[in-house]
Amino acid sequence: MASETISLSQDEALDLHLEKSGVEKQKLLNHPVGLFVLFLTEMWERFSYYGMRALLTLFLVSEISKGGWHWTDAEALRLYGWYTGLVYFTPIIGGLIADRLTGYRKAVIIGGLIMTLGHASMAMEGLSNIFFYLGLLLMITGNGMFKPNISSIVGQLYPPISDKKDSAYAIFYMGINSGAFLGILMCGYVGETQGWHWGFGLAGIFMLFGTIQFYFAQKIFGILGQKIDKAEIVVPKTEDLPKEEAAGIITKQRLWVIGVFSLFTIFFWMVFEQAGGSMTLFAKNYTLRDLTGSAGTAFRWVDSILTIFPLIAVTVVLVALGKRIFKKYPATIIFTALSFIIIWCLGIWKVQNVFSAEKTEVPASWFGILNSFFIVLLAPFFSKIWESKFNPSGPVKFAIGLIFLGVGFAGLAYGGMDIASGAKVAQVSMFWLVFAYFFHTVGELCVSPVGLSYVSKLAPAKLVGLMFGVWFVCTFIGNLLAGLSGSLITSISNTYSISTFFLIFTAIPVVAGLGMLALSPKLRKWMHGVH
Image (cartoon, rainbow, N blue to C red; front, side, top):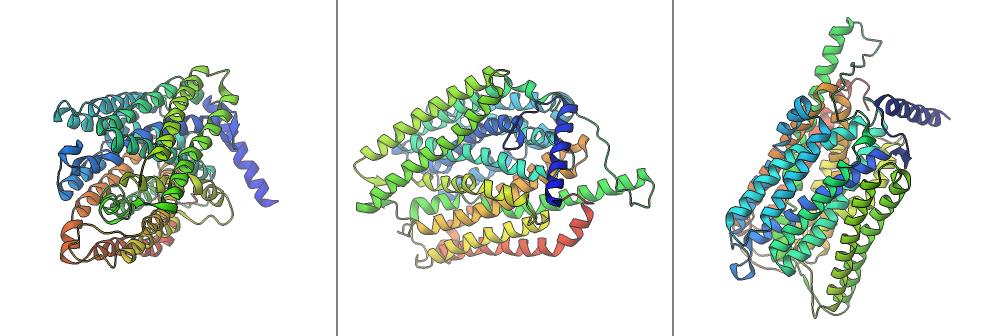
């Protein structure tokens, strides 16, 4: 009975908050329909980002005869690190601009349009190298306006301190990874089989659709994202200090918690973002990808199921959303439906090509979909856990996530034990990459969506955009370190072994996770009732 009362009060508080903000009160899966508009917007943005990212390293290291630039592994991974890092640095600037000038909604639209131009520029890389670098610059800039501000709107949909936020960000994170999954799958396949520029250009088409559907759905958010509400800080009645002084101390301590969380994300992303760099090269050079006989047939069926399953899942979300908002927001549903028709056509075309191919070769970019697939599969489960009585505190979730990340790399280190020092190629079973991506995904679900939720809950209303910017700056540092450390793969594997390289990335997150566990009692105290 007690749990039901708490659940009811949470829902009542949410309804009151939506009404005061002029937000559409209709629900889907017990969350505001606006969350699913943001879900679909972010899905297409992540399609574009991860679709391009899946190709970046492979394009740079591929031979000139195959349309690539034939860079060394170290050169490609350094550029990869700077790019993936800078797309998380510019959000602090985009957050400030939104906080003080544009509001969150306009910032999202501006960022989406700039990123669309960036993809268009990269699609013309064959004409001149300048278009390639211009495209990277535009995408870095556009992401700075888009990324922190759409995350801020998610947080604004809920009361300042609400247990439903963790669940909401888990659902939102499923949208992120649905887009990432489809982007890597489609753009990776098109880029590797049809030409790099086709893959780069395809990513931009869906970025444009995501921006348009969000533009036509703006009224669904009422005043949220249009102006910054200066909400009062909630001060516990048990404080002995004067209200103003107590509020100041609570705010400072909560900001310290955000700072600690952000700092530990550096260790997480430094290790996790090996996915698009050293792990992609491991897939390309050291993994058995040419499949024959029953193994080849099995892969074709698995690949086809993995292509169609997420399309069905996100289509179900679109249909459910359309039933609730089509009458009020027809343009949003029409443009989103059009984008779904295109992606369904691409999916069917891809499946036909895979089955008609003479041989079965797993694309090196294909392994990148595993992280997103596991997130789509596991996010609802984690969402339920975060709403249950078994919900651990934020610091404990972080610690668990970091340790699981290390477990994934321990599997890769074990799988690569037989690869000799300096070997350029090998035929390691695909199982170890699947193993690693599974545990990396479990770790990510304990860190990234939870971190976004806590930034939203702990930051004062007037600093939410800035705090998301700080969060993404630490993500920038982690991504940059991922590229720079990943570029050492050749030198470490030549001097020692590829197994030693992955053991380093086993130790880093495990040590960081144990450190977070040690800090968790103090951090929980500084959170002042936010759970």
